[in-house]
Image 1 (cartoon, helix red, strand yellow):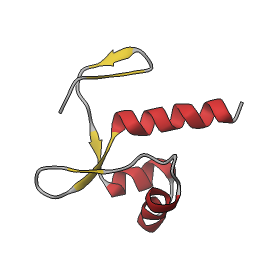
Image 2 (tube, helix red, strand yellow; image 1 turned 90 degrees about the horizontal axis):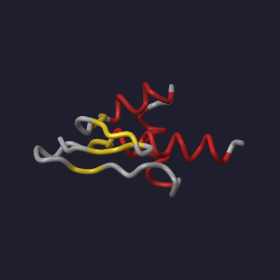
Image 3 (tube, rainbow, N blue to C red; image 1 turned 30 degrees about the vertical axis):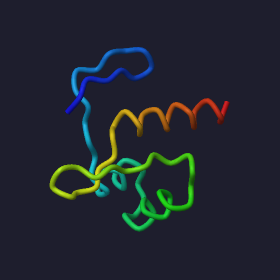
Image 4 (cartoon, one colour; image 1 turned 180 degrees about the horizontal axis):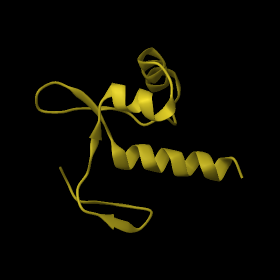
Amino acid sequence: MRNVSVGGMPQAEERYLSVQDVARRYAISIQTVWRHTKHNPDFPKPIKILNGSTRWRMSDILAYEVRRQEVGR
């Protein structure tokens, strides 16, 4: 975990989300998460962590959501 700030507000520790967590957050299927990852350049890119698992940084997810809200205004 690493210290991060989101929107200028310091956060204690970075959180990492699994593909299941991301799918649940957006109420989409796991396959759709992967589709967005591959075909939507704005969608946060996953990272590989030590044990070979793929995770999304919560800070990247939150930044993506902020960008989407700004575009929708």
